[in-house]
Amino acid sequence: MVDAATESSGPTHAITHGPSFAMLRVDLSPGQTLVAEAGSMVARHQPVSMQVKLNAGRGAGLFAWLKALLVALLRKVVGGETFLVNHFSAAQAGSVWLAPQMAGQISHRRLSGERLVLSTGAYLAHSGDVDIGLRFGGLRGILAKEGAFFLEISGHGELWFSSYGGVEVVEVSQPFMIDNGHLVGYEGDLTFDIKSAGGGMMGLVASGEGLVCEFTGHGRVYIQSRNLGSLVSWLTPLVP
Image (tube, rainbow, N blue to C red; front, side, top):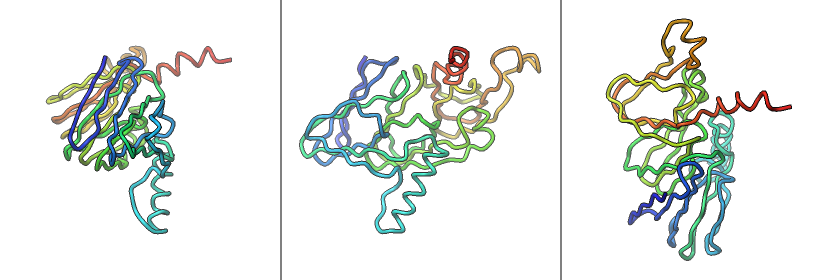
């Protein structure tokens, strides 16, 4: 399976071996830069250079560096991202291959000023004028098993994110429920609350569904076919 895209202002890319064990190849032309999660590189051509930078916005001077250090630390501790990110650039045309930590799908989204909210750990890479910030999810995010913070991504450029298992995109225009642990991200005019899956107390305790995220509004949600929490629960009894 190959998912390819070409944009005059952005690099060509191809997603292969998906959806189970997806790998991303980004073809960089001179002057183009790719930012990727630390540890995600599989391979790169020799003309492609790599710089390691703080996972924070650009800036100059000591104050900007200290601010970047604090932002990177927050993203590491509460955002589930790596403390450092890799910046790839090419003096001559060359490619970079990336893969996420978990087995699953890699999705591509071309941003043209839209805002996309991702679960922590879903971000893989981006190119262009893309801003990545933190959105406080509070108790809802914790109960949804997505953590207290989400990643809020906006701007103009190419974005790649990953999931555990395959990804399905659902257009939402009426109340829509997602079992907690299966949410990858969402965009548009959407909000969500945490509710019981139904069936009263017996349904909450014995159905195996527990709590769900109920979305309202209009927009798009990205759901993953596997649940990392379920994998951990399955593995725990097997660990000595």
